[in-house]
Image 1 (cartoon, rainbow, N blue to C red):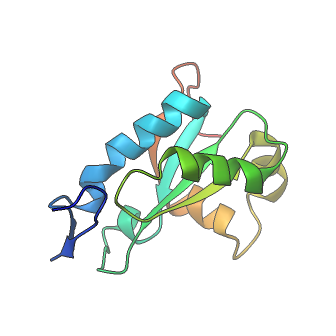
Image 2 (image 1 turned 180 degrees about the vertical axis):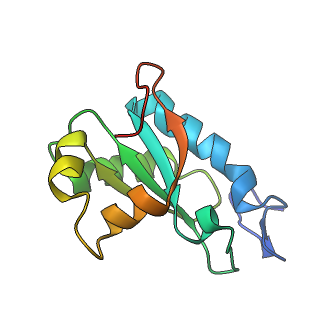
Length: 126
């Protein structure tokens, strides 16, 4: 198999499931961006993975100036993983002001997601 080529067969990417790729993706984000939390949400968090699923992650950083640019930077940092990943970036200030907006992706991630990483100094979810 050529390097960098993604082969999807029977729910597996290069012979691994999305969940099997998740720890590596999260570790890279933690190493490069030092988030407060990383929350897995969407179909994978609910155990409803399909052939069209991706890894949906809410990355909570201490402070974010430009969410879009930061999400792009995270995407570049994990681009060598052969799995589709959607990144949403937020910070505690946005969670406090918009975390309960009905129908928002942020609220869905916070209420239905699974905490997959939390900084050692944090003792409870944001």
